[in-house]
Length: 474
Image (cartoon, rainbow, N blue to C red):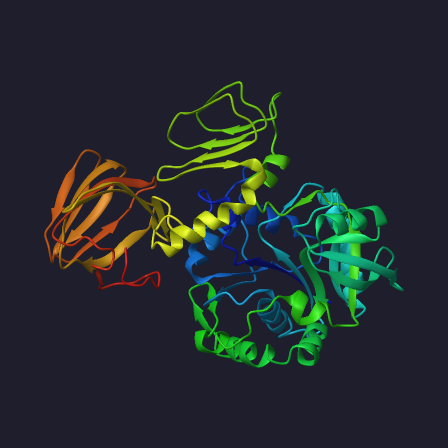
């Protein structure tokens, strides 16, 4: 029987702002260890007999996801691009349809990409039980042993043992996020477990249950998969079809209604890293309970989380704070109110600010660029182009550009002229001139670009070559 791990990478991670943003959400960041969260997840679900994972991600993150898989030497079975978010039930339907194309009874193991699991042997043991229960026709979820009367999670009530799968149980009920008194009762009872949003099921079983419990999901998803286009290494779901799918979780659509729900209770060192305070809990702390990263100096400071990029950050006489300093934003919050960071993000979005979505560094398939300075008629950026990559032939209607190479070798096409530039050499691209920039070397090409002109918007670009399927923006 085929087994397909499926990794969902659609979250925006707003509660970990300003480090996590729309263009670079938390699953694509290394928040707990050297690898990013999605890399850790993919590595964790590599188990004997399983196919290479299927990744389902936001269209805007496709190149970052693909690059991060290359970094760990993984070739996914597929990278499926959602044109818009539609929650976990449509995503699970996509996974079942794709995994079940050649084997309708294929087992799908569906995991979020942004959780921490610190006890991998316990996870593998729980997964083996879940796969066995799923092969028998159950839709299995992981019941995470609660360590506190948490009010921020839904709960699963365990029922009778499941025949033929030791360690698995029928689900008696799903419970909504409780108040503090109810959560304390759940913890004392011992029969209630946190719902971590991880599922294992046979493709045909989920499809049957979707048809029965949520019939509005499958028709648009089937059409979106049938009309999907292959784009480089990606499967691009049909946007018009997928937009018709209901925005609903697999819990509401199926799990709370089906008679086939099962749970595997487990203690796997799980944390959903849903806030800065939860990240503080799992990171190594100093003797005063502080978690520090970057250039940080403290005096008389306790139980705080401080992350500082590119600048010295000093704290004096405080405790229980979260301080996150990036190049363009600083967050200061009481650790007990860390969940409320989303309210700041919502206010910034309502004001039309760019900080909820973009970092100062913007990533592209060819490399990255960072805004260094800007004024009314100029913009200074630091551009990095990876070895062997290029920015295709294009032109600008309203701006000229000056390029200074500070590392590596550049091959510059300007009009009909091709020039090789080395470190400390420069060139000028006139307004309206067709031009191309390539890195023919074996080290990253870094250059400083100075744009000048009456309009410097990112949409002032006319692509004459498009190797990466990019829109007409920087």
